[in-house]
Image 1 (cartoon, helix red, strand yellow):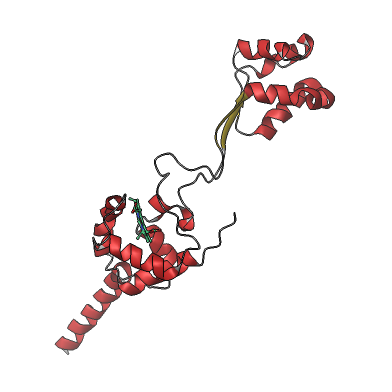
Image 2 (image 1 turned 60 degrees about the horizontal axis):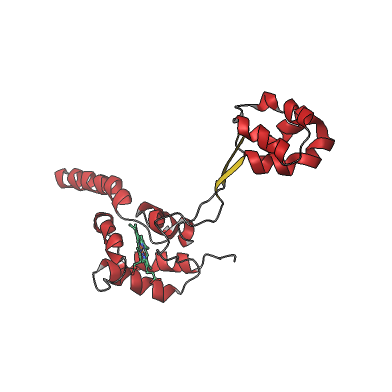
Length: 198
Ligand code: HEC
């Protein structure tokens, strides 16, 4: 009876501990994120690119109003835009809507290009490479076996060229999660199946 209870307890403990430490090969996409691969190779191995556009629109400087006049907008219309002074807009559409609220649709159509050019700041576009990752590889759609051997060679220290040292920083994650060859293969398969739209 005692041994039965003991083994029941042990089984129960395994039941609790095992699911967190042994990762199922089928969850390759999850594993890819759990092992932080995405922080260097991007979402689904598509590379470290911006996932959205960062832009701002505002007319918070006097010289912007002066520039509008210089670029050919009538002074009375430019004056109508003064309530927008210091307001910030995240998207171009909101900005244009606000402009329209002050000068009407017809003049907005006429002058929006000038106002957007002067009041718009685009920091980066969706799809732009994130600085610092220009020479990091993408994996999406690459050959499964190639990806498999390269990730193993890098992590096992057989491939030491280029920036591969950076990747070996994840060795502790690999060890702590008891990653097997099957896991590597399932990650390689998942990445090779990601469709890339060019
Ligand atoms: C800290 C950044 C970093 C992390 C995290 C990282 N890698 Fe890498 N990986 C790199 C770099 C940098 C290279 C390119 C090495 C070189 O220049 O030779 C690379 C190369 C590779 C390659 C070879 C690509 C090729 O075209 O030859 C594969 C496959 C790969 N990584 C998969 C992974 C997987 C899977 C993970 C997660 C388990 C991962 N990497 C985590 C930085 C990283």
